[in-house]
Image (cartoon, rainbow, N blue to C red):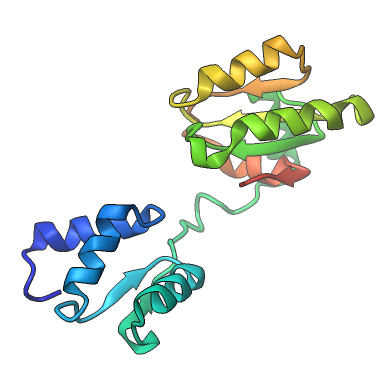
Length: 173
């Protein structure tokens, strides 16, 4: 990557980070001999790039996303109950953290939940994340099919650890 200016290096990483769009594939094909090292976020991405471009695994460096342990340490049971009460959530619930991007497939999740909640009527589906992208489509499915117990919290800054800790299921398609 040393032959590329910093802006290009960042763009290459950014493009590869997002499911490898066609523009990134062209960049890799045209410049793979100039790239000293590939940084990828998962073993799966490494394996896909390695097999697609015949690049040695020794040229691939997997660096997983970091996590802030302070923000994601489970709270004590009384604090958990307090935070869930502040969110207006009762257990049990399925949690989905998303900005409603199409790749997260929130529409299918809502459709599946509509069938599950018939069997487990006390279950809720909780969405946390900004309401943009496919949000209106998801909301329309919920309204059109009268799917109960779906909660949209919007963007959540505080107490995200409580949302994770209180969930029966974390759904991250």
